[in-house]
Image 1: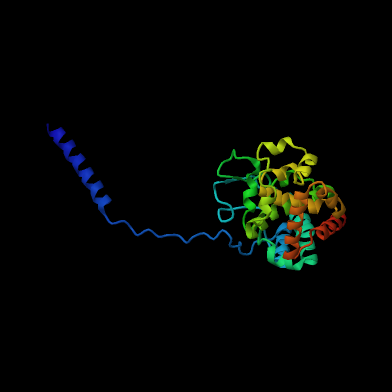
Image 2: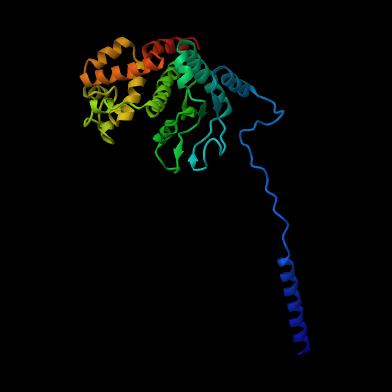
Length: 286
Protein backbone atom coordinates (compact mmCIF):
# COMPACT_ATOMS: atom_id res chain seq x y z
CA UNK A 1 0.00 0.00 0.00
CA UNK A 2 2.81 2.40 0.92
CA UNK A 3 4.51 1.65 -2.39
CA UNK A 4 1.27 2.38 -4.27
CA UNK A 5 0.84 5.69 -2.42
CA UNK A 6 4.44 6.57 -3.21
CA UNK A 7 4.03 5.92 -6.91
CA UNK A 8 0.77 7.86 -6.95
CA UNK A 9 2.41 10.83 -5.22
CA UNK A 10 5.38 10.75 -7.60
CA UNK A 11 3.08 10.74 -10.61
CA UNK A 12 1.14 13.66 -9.17
CA UNK A 13 4.34 15.65 -8.65
CA UNK A 14 5.46 15.01 -12.26
CA UNK A 15 2.09 16.12 -13.62
CA UNK A 16 2.21 19.27 -11.50
CA UNK A 17 5.68 20.12 -12.76
CA UNK A 18 4.60 19.66 -16.39
CA UNK A 19 1.50 21.82 -15.86
CA UNK A 20 3.56 24.47 -14.09
CA UNK A 21 6.07 24.80 -16.90
CA UNK A 22 3.42 24.63 -19.63
CA UNK A 23 1.48 27.45 -18.03
CA UNK A 24 4.46 29.77 -17.88
CA UNK A 25 4.30 32.65 -20.30
CA UNK A 26 6.19 31.83 -23.47
CA UNK A 27 8.80 34.14 -24.83
CA UNK A 28 7.47 36.48 -27.51
CA UNK A 29 7.97 35.03 -30.98
CA UNK A 30 10.32 37.04 -33.10
CA UNK A 31 9.16 37.30 -36.70
CA UNK A 32 11.90 37.10 -39.22
CA UNK A 33 12.02 39.68 -41.97
CA UNK A 34 10.28 38.72 -45.20
CA UNK A 35 12.67 37.30 -47.73
CA UNK A 36 13.20 39.44 -50.80
CA UNK A 37 13.67 36.88 -53.54
CA UNK A 38 14.64 39.54 -56.07
CA UNK A 39 17.38 41.05 -53.93
CA UNK A 40 20.69 40.32 -55.65
CA UNK A 41 23.33 38.49 -53.66
CA UNK A 42 25.87 40.96 -52.44
CA UNK A 43 29.41 40.61 -53.76
CA UNK A 44 28.41 37.61 -55.88
CA UNK A 45 30.75 36.74 -58.72
CA UNK A 46 28.91 37.19 -62.01
CA UNK A 47 29.22 34.63 -64.76
CA UNK A 48 28.89 35.24 -68.50
CA UNK A 49 25.12 34.72 -68.47
CA UNK A 50 24.71 37.24 -65.66
CA UNK A 51 26.63 39.77 -67.75
CA UNK A 52 24.46 39.14 -70.83
CA UNK A 53 21.29 39.50 -68.75
CA UNK A 54 22.60 42.75 -67.25
CA UNK A 55 23.38 44.04 -70.75
CA UNK A 56 19.88 43.21 -72.00
CA UNK A 57 18.32 44.97 -69.01
CA UNK A 58 20.55 48.02 -69.42
CA UNK A 59 20.13 48.39 -73.17
CA UNK A 60 16.51 47.30 -73.63
CA UNK A 61 14.77 47.50 -70.26
CA UNK A 62 13.81 43.80 -70.14
CA UNK A 63 14.72 41.55 -67.20
CA UNK A 64 15.44 37.97 -68.26
CA UNK A 65 14.78 35.09 -65.85
CA UNK A 66 15.94 31.51 -66.30
CA UNK A 67 15.86 30.53 -62.61
CA UNK A 68 12.54 31.01 -60.87
CA UNK A 69 11.34 31.52 -57.32
CA UNK A 70 7.86 32.11 -55.79
CA UNK A 71 8.03 35.81 -56.67
CA UNK A 72 8.37 34.95 -60.36
CA UNK A 73 6.19 31.84 -60.71
CA UNK A 74 3.81 30.61 -58.03
CA UNK A 75 4.23 27.08 -56.57
CA UNK A 76 1.21 25.72 -58.49
CA UNK A 77 2.99 26.26 -61.80
CA UNK A 78 4.91 23.27 -63.13
CA UNK A 79 7.92 23.55 -65.42
CA UNK A 80 11.48 22.38 -65.98
CA UNK A 81 14.19 25.06 -65.92
CA UNK A 82 16.62 24.95 -68.81
CA UNK A 83 20.36 24.55 -68.44
CA UNK A 84 22.86 27.35 -67.97
CA UNK A 85 24.34 26.90 -71.44
CA UNK A 86 20.94 26.94 -73.16
CA UNK A 87 19.80 29.97 -71.18
CA UNK A 88 23.00 31.71 -72.17
CA UNK A 89 22.53 30.93 -75.88
CA UNK A 90 18.85 31.87 -75.82
CA UNK A 91 19.44 35.21 -74.09
CA UNK A 92 22.25 36.20 -76.44
CA UNK A 93 20.87 34.92 -79.76
CA UNK A 94 17.09 35.17 -79.41
CA UNK A 95 16.41 37.88 -76.83
CA UNK A 96 19.25 40.26 -77.70
CA UNK A 97 20.17 39.73 -81.36
CA UNK A 98 16.93 38.59 -82.99
CA UNK A 99 14.22 40.21 -80.89
CA UNK A 100 15.06 43.35 -78.93
CA UNK A 101 18.00 44.53 -81.03
CA UNK A 102 16.15 44.77 -84.37
CA UNK A 103 12.97 45.94 -82.64
CA UNK A 104 14.62 48.89 -80.91
CA UNK A 105 16.72 49.82 -83.93
CA UNK A 106 13.95 49.65 -86.55
CA UNK A 107 10.77 50.34 -84.61
CA UNK A 108 11.65 52.34 -81.49
CA UNK A 109 8.06 53.42 -80.84
CA UNK A 110 6.80 49.85 -80.73
CA UNK A 111 9.81 48.77 -78.67
CA UNK A 112 9.31 51.57 -76.15
CA UNK A 113 5.57 51.04 -75.65
CA UNK A 114 4.88 47.37 -76.32
CA UNK A 115 7.84 45.39 -75.03
CA UNK A 116 7.32 43.40 -71.82
CA UNK A 117 9.55 44.22 -68.87
CA UNK A 118 10.16 40.57 -67.98
CA UNK A 119 11.08 37.59 -70.14
CA UNK A 120 11.03 34.00 -68.85
CA UNK A 121 13.12 31.23 -70.43
CA UNK A 122 11.72 27.75 -69.70
CA UNK A 123 13.21 24.40 -70.61
CA UNK A 124 9.88 22.60 -70.93
CA UNK A 125 6.29 23.67 -71.34
CA UNK A 126 4.73 25.75 -68.55
CA UNK A 127 1.70 24.07 -67.02
CA UNK A 128 -0.62 25.88 -64.65
CA UNK A 129 -2.36 24.29 -61.63
CA UNK A 130 -1.77 20.70 -62.75
CA UNK A 131 1.34 18.83 -63.78
CA UNK A 132 -0.81 16.88 -66.25
CA UNK A 133 -2.34 19.90 -67.98
CA UNK A 134 -1.80 20.22 -71.71
CA UNK A 135 1.45 21.58 -73.08
CA UNK A 136 -0.36 24.51 -74.67
CA UNK A 137 -1.21 25.74 -71.16
CA UNK A 138 1.96 27.79 -71.36
CA UNK A 139 0.22 30.26 -73.65
CA UNK A 140 -1.62 31.57 -70.59
CA UNK A 141 1.65 33.00 -69.39
CA UNK A 142 1.58 35.51 -72.22
CA UNK A 143 -1.86 36.88 -71.52
CA UNK A 144 -0.14 39.54 -69.39
CA UNK A 145 1.01 43.03 -70.21
CA UNK A 146 4.37 42.98 -68.48
CA UNK A 147 5.77 39.48 -69.02
CA UNK A 148 6.56 37.26 -72.00
CA UNK A 149 7.74 33.68 -71.69
CA UNK A 150 8.84 30.95 -74.05
CA UNK A 151 9.08 27.24 -73.33
CA UNK A 152 10.58 24.18 -75.04
CA UNK A 153 14.01 25.82 -75.01
CA UNK A 154 15.53 22.39 -74.28
CA UNK A 155 14.42 21.27 -77.75
CA UNK A 156 15.97 24.15 -79.68
CA UNK A 157 18.90 23.76 -82.07
CA UNK A 158 20.98 26.89 -81.56
CA UNK A 159 23.34 25.92 -84.38
CA UNK A 160 20.55 26.05 -86.97
CA UNK A 161 19.79 29.59 -88.16
CA UNK A 162 16.57 28.54 -89.84
CA UNK A 163 15.33 27.03 -86.58
CA UNK A 164 16.14 30.23 -84.70
CA UNK A 165 14.43 32.33 -87.35
CA UNK A 166 11.31 30.16 -87.19
CA UNK A 167 11.30 30.53 -83.41
CA UNK A 168 10.94 34.28 -83.85
CA UNK A 169 7.63 33.75 -85.64
CA UNK A 170 6.37 31.83 -82.60
CA UNK A 171 7.74 34.46 -80.19
CA UNK A 172 5.81 37.20 -82.00
CA UNK A 173 2.77 34.90 -82.03
CA UNK A 174 2.92 34.73 -78.24
CA UNK A 175 3.55 38.47 -78.00
CA UNK A 176 0.45 38.98 -80.17
CA UNK A 177 -1.59 37.48 -77.35
CA UNK A 178 -0.34 40.33 -75.18
CA UNK A 179 -1.38 42.87 -77.79
CA UNK A 180 -4.75 41.16 -78.02
CA UNK A 181 -5.28 41.39 -74.25
CA UNK A 182 -3.95 44.92 -74.09
CA UNK A 183 -5.85 46.52 -76.96
CA UNK A 184 -8.39 43.94 -78.06
CA UNK A 185 -8.96 42.57 -81.53
CA UNK A 186 -11.93 44.83 -82.05
CA UNK A 187 -15.67 44.31 -82.36
CA UNK A 188 -15.50 44.06 -86.14
CA UNK A 189 -12.63 41.56 -86.20
CA UNK A 190 -14.48 38.88 -84.26
CA UNK A 191 -17.42 39.09 -86.62
CA UNK A 192 -15.57 38.56 -89.87
CA UNK A 193 -15.37 34.78 -89.33
CA UNK A 194 -18.18 34.43 -86.82
CA UNK A 195 -19.59 30.91 -87.07
CA UNK A 196 -16.64 29.68 -89.15
CA UNK A 197 -14.24 28.66 -86.38
CA UNK A 198 -13.40 24.97 -86.14
CA UNK A 199 -12.84 24.73 -82.41
CA UNK A 200 -11.14 21.65 -81.04
CA UNK A 201 -10.45 19.00 -82.19
CA UNK A 202 -11.86 20.28 -85.49
CA UNK A 203 -8.90 22.47 -86.44
CA UNK A 204 -6.49 19.50 -86.33
CA UNK A 205 -8.32 17.77 -89.17
CA UNK A 206 -7.90 20.72 -91.57
CA UNK A 207 -4.89 21.37 -93.77
CA UNK A 208 -3.48 24.87 -94.02
CA UNK A 209 -4.57 25.15 -97.66
CA UNK A 210 -8.15 24.41 -96.65
CA UNK A 211 -7.93 26.81 -93.72
CA UNK A 212 -6.73 29.62 -95.97
CA UNK A 213 -9.77 29.23 -98.20
CA UNK A 214 -11.91 29.31 -95.05
CA UNK A 215 -10.30 32.56 -93.93
CA UNK A 216 -7.35 31.53 -91.71
CA UNK A 217 -3.61 31.59 -92.39
CA UNK A 218 -3.24 28.10 -90.93
CA UNK A 219 -5.48 25.48 -89.40
CA UNK A 220 -4.65 26.52 -85.82
CA UNK A 221 -5.94 30.01 -86.59
CA UNK A 222 -9.34 28.40 -87.07
CA UNK A 223 -9.34 27.18 -83.48
CA UNK A 224 -10.64 30.44 -82.00
CA UNK A 225 -10.52 34.23 -82.64
CA UNK A 226 -7.52 34.80 -80.33
CA UNK A 227 -5.44 32.24 -82.27
CA UNK A 228 -6.74 33.66 -85.54
CA UNK A 229 -5.30 37.03 -84.53
CA UNK A 230 -1.96 35.61 -83.33
CA UNK A 231 -1.43 33.37 -86.38
CA UNK A 232 -2.05 36.36 -88.64
CA UNK A 233 0.79 38.25 -86.96
CA UNK A 234 2.92 35.12 -87.12
CA UNK A 235 2.27 34.68 -90.86
CA UNK A 236 3.34 38.24 -91.65
CA UNK A 237 6.73 37.50 -90.08
CA UNK A 238 7.13 34.15 -91.81
CA UNK A 239 6.10 34.92 -95.40
CA UNK A 240 7.11 37.72 -97.76
CA UNK A 241 4.59 40.42 -98.55
CA UNK A 242 4.09 38.98 -102.04
CA UNK A 243 3.33 35.57 -100.55
CA UNK A 244 0.90 37.11 -98.08
CA UNK A 245 -0.95 38.83 -100.91
CA UNK A 246 -1.33 35.52 -102.74
CA UNK A 247 -2.66 33.81 -99.61
CA UNK A 248 -5.22 36.48 -98.73
CA UNK A 249 -6.44 36.45 -102.33
CA UNK A 250 -7.95 33.04 -101.58
CA UNK A 251 -10.49 34.48 -99.12
CA UNK A 252 -12.13 37.87 -98.76
CA UNK A 253 -12.53 37.23 -95.03
CA UNK A 254 -8.85 36.47 -94.61
CA UNK A 255 -7.93 39.60 -96.54
CA UNK A 256 -10.16 41.71 -94.29
CA UNK A 257 -8.65 40.33 -91.09
CA UNK A 258 -5.10 40.63 -92.42
CA UNK A 259 -5.63 44.32 -93.20
CA UNK A 260 -7.07 44.90 -89.72
CA UNK A 261 -4.09 43.28 -88.02
CA UNK A 262 -1.46 44.85 -90.28
CA UNK A 263 -2.88 48.35 -89.79
CA UNK A 264 -3.25 47.84 -86.03
CA UNK A 265 0.45 47.03 -85.72
CA UNK A 266 1.38 49.82 -88.11
CA UNK A 267 -0.49 52.32 -85.91
CA UNK A 268 1.35 50.94 -82.89
CA UNK A 269 4.68 51.60 -84.59
CA UNK A 270 5.69 48.42 -86.40
CA UNK A 271 5.43 47.44 -90.07
CA UNK A 272 5.11 43.64 -89.94
CA UNK A 273 6.40 43.16 -93.48
CA UNK A 274 9.47 45.28 -92.83
CA UNK A 275 10.09 43.44 -89.57
CA UNK A 276 10.09 40.18 -91.51
CA UNK A 277 12.90 41.51 -93.73
CA UNK A 278 14.90 42.72 -90.72
CA UNK A 279 14.52 39.36 -88.96
CA UNK A 280 15.80 37.55 -92.05
CA UNK A 281 18.83 39.84 -92.13
CA UNK A 282 19.53 39.47 -88.40
CA UNK A 283 19.30 35.67 -88.60
CA UNK A 284 21.72 35.61 -91.55
CA UNK A 285 24.21 37.68 -89.57
CA UNK A 286 24.31 35.27 -86.60
